[in-house]
Image 1 (tube, helix red, strand yellow):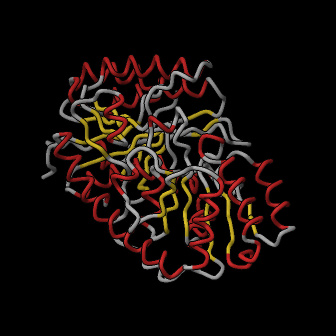
Image 2 (tube, one colour):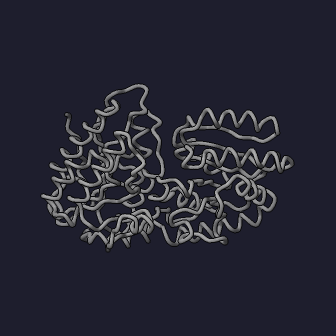
Image 3 (cartoon, helix red, strand yellow):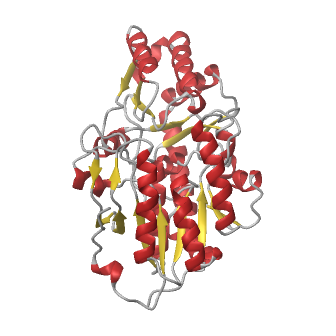
Length: 409
């Protein structure tokens, strides 16, 4: 395996400790460097926000990624490199796009990086509990001590996953729990309770410091639905809700527009788009896009949908972190009531579906479309609340205290 060229800021000797964030993510610079359009999703934004939060408190932080590149239709091999991405020091490790083998390769890449660049006194945060972390986490417990090796838990174990992936995830979580600190960063208070974590730092998500002033909603009002799209994340609810809207409120067709990004459910969504078009409603399915185009779509949207189903086994152990991104950018959050949603938002700062059914969703969409000025004010209140509670500086201060990070002179 080739070695990763490391720039001077990471290799020079310092008396202070650094905080490393290990995560299989992609940020904007990686796509530019590799000429790809890999997804830059909520996980990438959160890890970047965590590292930036620590950095905002004058502490050194480095993002270390063995990016998942299995979506590549071209190269099978991706070289590692060091760069500044979102003003953060990022070490992108070599990666391969062969499914299955990519995780084995990543395990050796993480281990080789840690052996060369993580020294006593540093700290490491692992984003979730992927199997490729186990060798490097075991090594780092020996080098750093258990208290300096911390997990950032985004999901809990799922007993309903009976396939090989589910078995491997449960096994890796068990092994990571044994070598990592009993303390953990968690995505929600609910997850900390489910996993019986007594000492937890709850980070629902991370927002930018500054607020984008969006003003009034557009005409028509644009609703954005994205992320991983499947039944548990609201695909059936979304489709049924739009059909109910078209049936009950056909006069609203000129006042609303729907855009779908993310991945999954393509055939069902395209069929729905054709069906709604006959009633005059616009549903634009834009799933084959890169990060730049997604940002443009996000900037033009007024309402962001988060439709994770309360009864889903998966959603009982996680939190829809994308609501932080949506609210921080000034979109109205239209969300189901799961996890910590009611601890973050109320009816003055978001549109919360107390019942996750098609008539309720259609009713909310209709109300937003007919009184956009009212909901624009709610969106603004939600933006203020999230930036105040989840800004990089606020999260960084909590993390520095929780992790016990040493100051950079």
